[in-house]
Length: 517
Image (cartoon, rainbow, N blue to C red; front, side, top):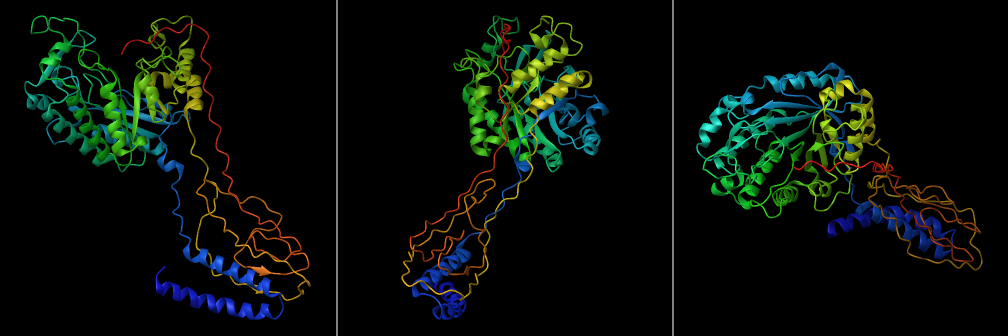
């Protein structure tokens, strides 16, 4: 404390304590006077020194979104039934890079603007996903032709799941990365200020969709050069672990910077040998680097093959689900496909086993909840037609914003004014114990509540009323008694937190093994 401040406090204290001291000295025992002065000094010091506690933000301001997100396909309109359904907590909208940026630096915002305008009156959360891979738009991909022209020969060719030959940029090609980062910055600049936009997706190891998918097959596929495979062509093109990790961190940094008010969602997967000896290493390294730089809860890790045949948590530590599980609590997911109208029951491993679409979707939710997933993207056909299962999913997944509870705030107190009431005389042989009473310290807990004591709550006015048998006050003021009174202390009790949902009990029926990534 500097000298000027010390002098100011001394003058204020003198003006406060001298009249009290003169009055008390005429009526009370000297020991009582000493204790009272010590108490006033302590209160005054707390008033001068105690910092003002900055109010903590409402949990709603930092909470990762939760609940059911209606997964709307590219080019499809958001249905009014989803917008008015209280069990639907958010809408996932989809745009394609080729449509968003038909020529370099020229953007067509009509699709995303229309989605935002339609959703806004209903107050639903919004997730924005941009399809970026799959090669040239003119050949059925999601990428503008002008990007592929700029990339040139730095590409990899493969057959997609439908047997269609596709060519995409190498994940680490810097020209491709620069074009993609510029697009990410532009879309973030337009929508990051919208409070309903809660999530933006990002990807860097995706051959076609925004889900993780790396050309790592060792099967000879007939694509030149003769006798080659996806993995051998990737190695010949210069694949290394560090190149892919560097590409991933570039994209994640760009997304985090473009979307400062949102969480970034990254779907993860594996890269097999011979490209990686540890199949989870690239996803893990990018996850850890991003969370270290931007915060654990800014990056939400996801899986987009959520189904009724995924294992319940905790998974086998060697399985493809382990990295997802250990990435919690900031994890989310997307269903593998729709349950409604699928006679093959892909969401149940390709075999319905006598289960209805409603039962398969409910079982999928149970599996997902066992991992602690925050939100689940469910296909629009299911959101529209399986209302009972959607209600169940909402009940299991949605985390309501906690109702604010009044809490004590450490604020400077006014200078205490002691009022002496000289109505009693001191006992003949008082034995006061002038104990330096500790001032209860505000503990930063959610809702500190002083423990009940036999006396009223302390106030800023210290009233001294000595009697033959003085009672202790909550301000813990020592008083003369025949036996020293114990010093009461104030304790802070945290308010009870919501009881976490128990994990669902795994079903007893045999569960088919999860499909390989």
